[in-house]
Length: 124
Image (cartoon, rainbow, N blue to C red; front, side):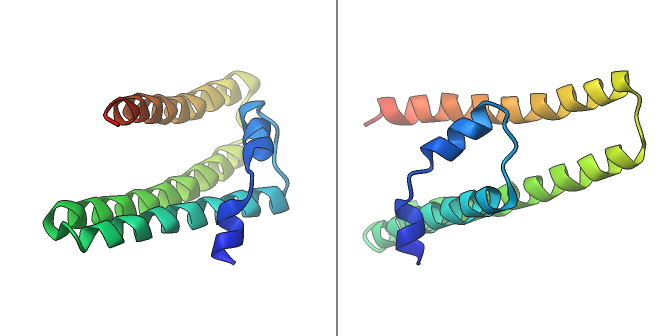
């Protein structure tokens, strides 16, 4: 099952996300499961390399696992924060402010990813 999820082409779903389209529950769950499968595969590959260079890669594996836990936590916090903000029944101006603040946090994370991947790609 993990291999099947890992092999899925998520590009159409990712394009929906980039277009700010709301995913239905099935798309959202599939994206989450496929992302986890790809991540578990990466951790497995790192683990197999760790057997060759144990001290160098053990910390990397731990960092990757912590990153995944942090992503899950951030996802949960985004959902609970949005629910709490909705309960406040904000006026349009404050809704706009909340949207901008939350989207800015995600944009910052995407920028961090792009910068990090650029340096990673250049080192190859």
